[in-house]
Amino acid sequence: MKLKLGLATLFLFSLQSYATENTALISQGEYLARAADCMACHTPDSGKPFAGGVKFALPIGTIYSTNISPDKQQGIGDYSESEFSRAVREGVRKDGQRLYPAMPYNAYAKLSDQDIHALYTYFMQGVKAVDQPNSGNDIPWYLAARWPLRIWNAINAPNPTNSATSTSDSDPIKRGAWLVEGPGHCGACHTPRGWMMQEKGLTAASESYLSGAEIEGWFAPSLRQLPYDAEQTALILKTGHNATSAITGPMSSVITHSSQYLTDSDAKAIGLYLDSIRIEKNQRPAALQVSLTDPDKNYLRYCSTCHGKEGQGTPNVIPSLQNNLLVMADNPASLIQVIAQGAQTPQTLGQLSWSMPGYHHVLNDEQLADLTNYVRGRFAGKEEKVTASQVKTFLATH
Image (cartoon, rainbow, N blue to C red; front, side, top):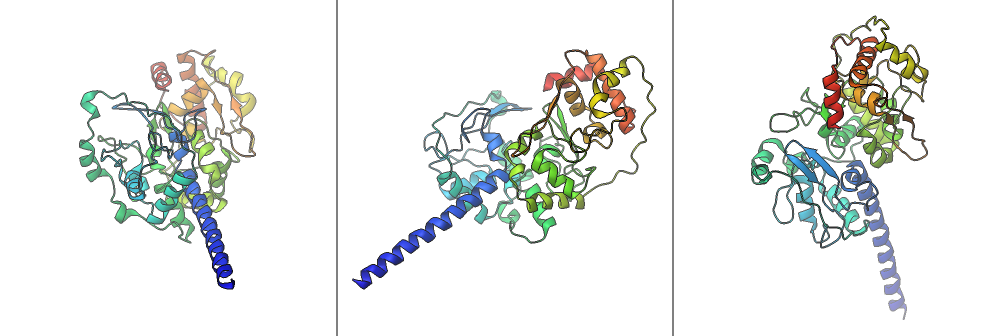
């Protein structure tokens, strides 16, 4: 009797230990999925989590993200862990077909086997299966072939075996490097592309890495010239704004679905890493003495009420136009989008979303160009002029 009772107790204890360990593994996988921003790319607005169908307009055509819920028919429910690993880190589906590199497997190659195990456990046990068919891609037949991706991968994608790194490094800068270069795949938007549509750099060893890039009518600014320190970088990743700046545009989704869930130490680690790879410009141009012609008076009419006559903004509330990434960028795309379409900061836990109205309904393309030139000239010393045709092109792209 005592033996049976002892075996039963041992069995129950083992079950409890397994459940505790499995819960921790699922939680770890969920955190990695957040850090990797899986939700934003695989969950459409008002759609079910990870059901796919998010539209991506690429130079070769339009593709739609796939269902990565554990549904066995439409999703990845029948993937083994090794098949899941190959898809995530090498861009190869269960059936052997190559994934288009819109899936950032070149960054996910840095995930370790332990990371993959946690992610797999989360997606199979912590995500609800969704029976939603995948949408067909809209790519011309002569560009739709996937076999050339084998060559593309050989040239541009790292080998997971050589790239995987530990996620538990105690050095915060190394931890930040792993988060940025790996699951965060920041280079996918912030690094310019080459003629093969590859990122021109995958690590800070290349000066092109994170130097800024145009994407869908916006300009993702350089992360190697941030006008604030690591603490303020961490704050903007967690809340969507800091003392002098605020996030809008495509990055808002990243804040809402991903970076706001980072631990404080991970957000700070990213800030420290970006600060460590800073590239300083030789000299920031002095602000131009711009006269207030009739078109430029639109700044006083529409902008100065909130941003101030000197563009100083209000700390922690209204972004400053001085040392502003959108204003200082050589590419004016994002500034044009904000002036014309307005802006809204991300929705985060415990933080209100702030809005700025757009002025395309009251200003024509030429007036928008004039206002953009005034802001860039006065607050960033930019002499290059934006034209009305450029405004029209950028707004049509968005």
